[in-house]
Image (cartoon, rainbow, N blue to C red; front, side, top):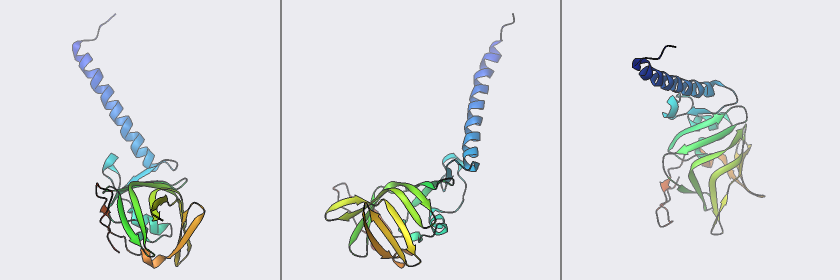
Amino acid sequence: MATATPRHHLLLPFLLLLLLFAGANVSVSGARDAPGEMRVYGSRLFGADDGPSAYEMLERFGFPRGILPEGVTGYTLRPSDGAFQVFLGTKECEFEVDGGYQLTYQRRISGKVAGGSIRDLQGVTVKIFMMNWGIDRVVMVDAGHLMFYVGPLSQAFPADNFEESPQCRCRHSDGGAAVATR
């Protein structure tokens, strides 16, 4: 029975690491191409491609780009069911929309998107009666109006209020915020 030389003992761990690394790269690049897997955009993480921006993707689904604030650093999208995640470069941010409603966006926003509809939305809240309520659905009801849903309640806004992305500012540590205007 032959024994491995010390040189083989050094080569084996190197080959295992190389195979492990190559396997990780194959699964990541394969995930970008498989229809049921998440695609990563706008991030250097895992060598993501430079596909359409999150703002351009919103427009492809029939939404104005301004429903997302400035500062998106990347997003994922699973084409098979529209599941997405959007990542902001800032921490929590706030801005005000018509009617005096204050919107708060978390650093990570998720949901499912299909033509003219975002559902299962998480990471976006609106302040109503001194409390923050989660916006769980947004629908483009026609070419001129967006409907935002908070549970069974809804409010329509003119779509042209969202033509440009607002600038958000991070919340202050005391819970207050510097609110940017449109």
